[in-house]
Image 1 (tube, rainbow, N blue to C red):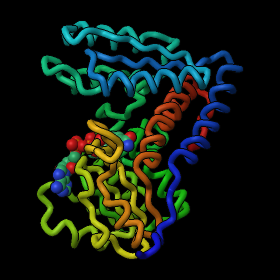
Image 2: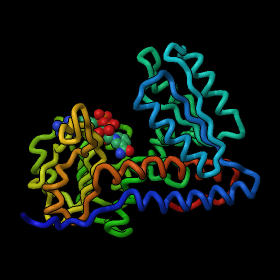
Image 3: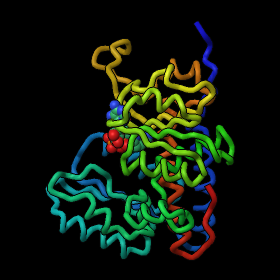
Image 4: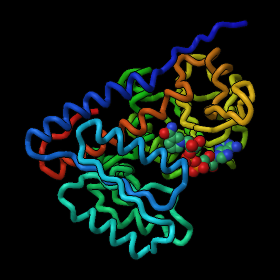
Length: 302
Ligand code: NAD
């Protein structure tokens, strides 16, 4: 059997070094009398959301942040949730506000996102932040965490200058696909956004020096779609049955057939321990960035 040629991009290790930079920034802010504050709001009791929210809160607390988790029942009204967001907007101890998605169907997520103060919107989903990212105002935007983390992984593999490279982003969600494409464009890549209606997806992906897969379909991207030497960032997180681990067991896989793609790619992220750890690290990074900006202090570089 052929040996994998790709180098692995170790998301856990890179996230660890981001976290160290966050810690130093958090310590400096705290010494200046500002303890970075992150509030995470969880509506209802979705088990996956509960795990995400707990991890975010724990990481924030471990970094010395003022970490607040606000649980509300699934029956909360939109008006009540808007009032809670407004309370957090006014709270001087809070610099980052995150309302965990998805919300119950009687609440309009865009109304909630638009109610968050843009300079506390550490998810980067508020239209003001989306617009700032699109117009290239990185200095004032808060950038969505998974896309920001994906770019750091690309920089780790290819260095800071990726100008002129062909990048294909598979997926056009507001959370991952679109902002990642904006960030690649800002780095002067030639960017294609592929999606569920794209014709000849394998042919499109074969042109790419950089592939970012953000679809949510296990092993959609096959090894023979990858241009030799390409950098592959696999954002997908898919739970599939893993009977080899015992009855009823599952495992996490990406959108890329890792074993196949690793034979062809130059660099590749694994799943797990690729993009996943970067997302939470960038949430912490956005919180210290928000705290620094609100205080009018210089912000750290990530
Ligand atoms: P989404 O469902 O909002 O968007 C999926 C996109 O994939 C859509 O734009 C759709 O057009 C496209 N698509 C669907 N089927 C396709 C096909 N056959 N060919 C080409 N494109 C297709 O999903 P999302 O929120 O962007 O998340 C995508 C994946 O990334 C999911 O697996 C999610 O769990 C994962 N994710 C991971 C992290 C992380 O921290 N690692 C963070 C966010 C999302």
